[in-house]
Length: 77
Image 1 (cartoon, rainbow, N blue to C red):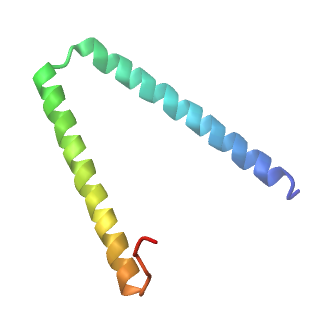
Image 2 (image 1 turned 180 degrees about the vertical axis):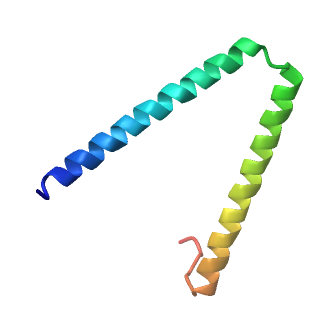
């Protein structure tokens, strides 16, 4: 019975992935038909890029702060 657990979980995962990808592609295709405003699209893309860079900076600073707190040597050889 235990041999079927991975088969069932992998099958479920693949089915969910395929379903989600179908609806994601369909949603993007439908959005493309609407004809979005180019300025709004560029503005939104810039905001997303800025938020990503700020999140990346926060993760890097947190990582180095944690490493320094734990006493890890961060010097290059």
